[in-house]
Image (tube, rainbow, N blue to C red):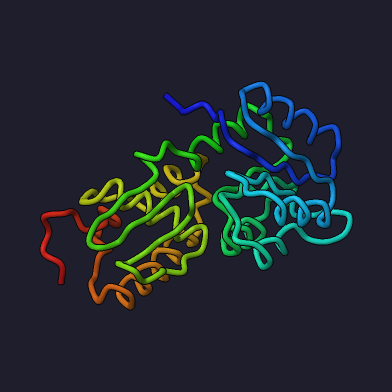
Length: 227
């Protein structure tokens, strides 16, 4: 059963006033503290003034691109909400650091379901294995005391791997489990896993992601010998 999103502080950055109001009111009724921004400048003012647990972000705003916020602030989990549904736009959002991606029109209930995947209870948000610690709520990844710079997609995949260590998944299964939507049947997952494997080797000196023909990919379980 999915977790209800409640008791959180959420910023809605959306220039469609009707959509923004509908979604903000829905989450306020669930017991969340909500703020609204219709422009990039308003979003910058809110992010500079208060900490947030999550941001719902439109990419196209009257005075700029929402993706610029990733360059200016240490962002909490961000769900990009946009009419841009081509694969390049999706990948750009994840590469910038987005936790998830929703294509308009997106109902408030669907948005809640997606947020619940990214805003976990503290006991579930932190996972550690082979010296690597991930915090799904803070979107941080560390190997010991060393910060691991991961894209949004890499973080989501690594979190999935570490919470399912020792089990093999195909690229399509990884996509569908991580993003809760039908696979695009593209090479994007393989691309992200390749980059993630390289970063893990560089940081830990170990091979932690294994590939087996016919089975897919697996993250090393706790009892496996690491080569």
